[in-house]
Amino acid sequence: MAQIAAWIDPNGRMTHTLAAAALRRAAAEAGHTLTLLDQPPQSQVPQSPPSGSEVLLWAAPQPPTLPAGEFFQTTPEDLIRDAAGVLSRAGLHTRANGSAAHTVQTVRATVPAVTPVVTPAPASPAPATVAAAAPVSASSSPSIVGVTSCPTGIAHTFMAAEGLEGGARALGRTVKIETQGSVGAGNTLSAEDIAGADVVIIAADTNVDLSRFAGKRVYQTGTKPAISGGQALVERALAEAQVYGAAGSSAAAGGDFVAQAAAAKQAKNDAAAGSGLGGELYKHLMTGVSHMLPLVVAGGLLIALAFAFGGIDAEGPFAEALMTIGGGSGAFGLFVPVLAGYIAYSIADRPGLAPGLVGGMMALETGSGFLGGIVAGFLAGYLTRWLNRSIRLPRTLQGLKPTLLLPLLGTMITGLLMIFVLGKPVAAALAAATTWLNSLGDTSAGLLGAVLGGMMAFDMGGPINKAAYTFSTGLIDSKVYGPIAAAMAAGMTPPLALFFATLLFKNRFTPDEREAGKAAGVLGISFITEGAIPFAARDPLRVIPALMAGSAVAGAISMAAGCLLRAPHGGVFVLLIPGAVTNLPMYVAAILAGTAVSTLLLGLLKRPLDQTERAIAAEESVSHPANS
Image (tube, rainbow, N blue to C red; front, side, top):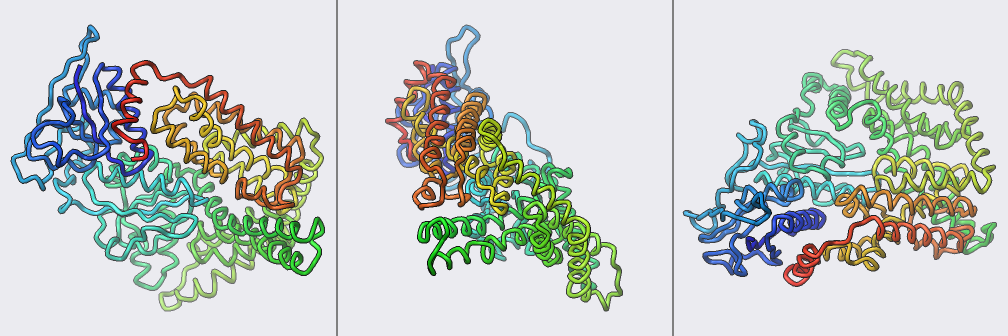
């Protein structure tokens, strides 16, 4: 049995937690004793690993600056993928008869301590193009920059950034990632950052403006690949990224900037992960949804406040003013045009914005609501893109296309089609759906709530979750408030259940997970379902079914009890506003019941830690504080 000391890079909480758990499990199975360090042992270890250990496992992008000593360098991502393989490459293995044996892998520095030590070769070689470009020091490494964005701009945006940063550093590259979250851009890329970049990685589920990356190698994908495999994504980007705007360079020289943007937009869509028609349509829809949500949230809360100050009829000057601001003359009157406008913008860039906005207004005029807005957005976007490609003008007249022809023709044709062709059929379909939803009995309503609830918990912020939420949010414009109530109750349940499970079933969770459970509780009451993702990523076959069951129960009770919600976000804080929720006691009961079901199922389905794992967990709680 070997005595192993390990230092795991604390940058990136989820990556650190998963890597630590994988290493503990692999070390226990191989019969080794593991000590996780809460501080890097640079100054403590002049000649040998710390704490009497026989080898130091260093899981961080940069190697330790030790004068000499015995250590093996890897990365947190390698530990997550194959911790047993890392131990084997470090010379730590288990004999066939079950007894542990090890060979200490010694790396002795022969250069000053400030120079990184050469690391052991990985188990499987990287692609030749990447390996050849891999630098030996940070000073000579090419820069990687990127942008991450998701529809709500909360969890997936920052988890994708964390994945890209960890993957780039694992390859020895310097990296800077801009996050386009719900409160605006963070860690913004400067012109100097972009100019010095070797490649630009866009990991986004919404449209990102690429105009500032003209002439750079750009690789497009969604947030999921960045979250699940940052290093692999960076390697793929380095090998496959294409120069942005190259296809339209000649046109740009003649002033056809719109043609260049459209060509680059198509290249982006073709390169995106899941670049089929379904993936493209989803990305355009989520761009519209991400711009629509602030209006829906603000409008819903203002309407709820109007009821709070003026009663069910919103009587009184102040209540009437709030109703005007939040209702059809204010925020709610804008959300369908904004939805349509930014769907069209995602497809055709700026030339599509005006036709999309006007098409959304025509959807309201024809009574086709949010369904008509979606139709108008896609119609305006693809029509404008087709017009842009089809219209050919002399170079001297190219400036007329973006300023005159595309806005005029795109807006006119979209508006006419919505008024005379598409508006009335879509309005009839929406009316039929609204009538059906309003006529649902308790059993049928409960079934719909269960389906919505299961979808909310299935991928916790992914496409299925967003589909259920978008459907429920869109119905608010038709004064159908039951589905959004079910969706929010079901979305709060998963992280809340994990919070209580880490308290009630401590023997099933590591110290890191129990600490993460506290954060999950805060996210749960705020209606941020993504707080459950770290737990689901580690044990998906047990965690996801347990969470889906509880969310289905919450959604079913909410719908069957006739609970209505006028504000589509805000978690428990919305419940404090009088009039925001109809049948508040049953709504609270739905959330509590769903949370209880998932909590109990987590306790039943998750396997308790065995004796060795408990010993390692106890040791970790002393030697490696969970909040590091």
